Image (cartoon, rainbow, N blue to C red; front, side, top):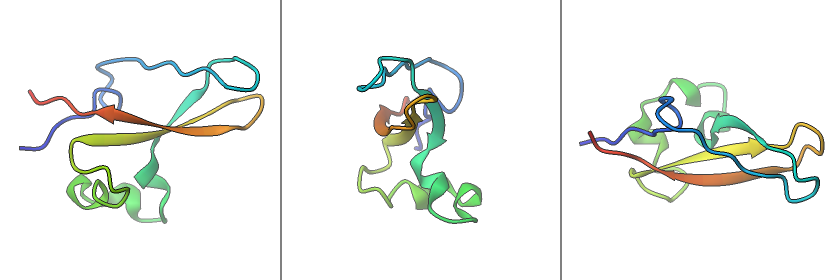
Length: 80
């Protein structure tokens, strides 16, 4: 059974502060969606294995709108 990312599906909010300026960073979505032009359209069961975190974690990229610093965050998937 596949889990759902609560962040991708709007079930939760996650706030991450920039380590440089302290502002809220913006969620830019799943890291796997930035691998190539077609990765956003691939089945999650395929792309979830790319980052090595496994099928129960969704890795998101957060970027500071001022500094441009990026950081990744592992979001645990929920099973409904």
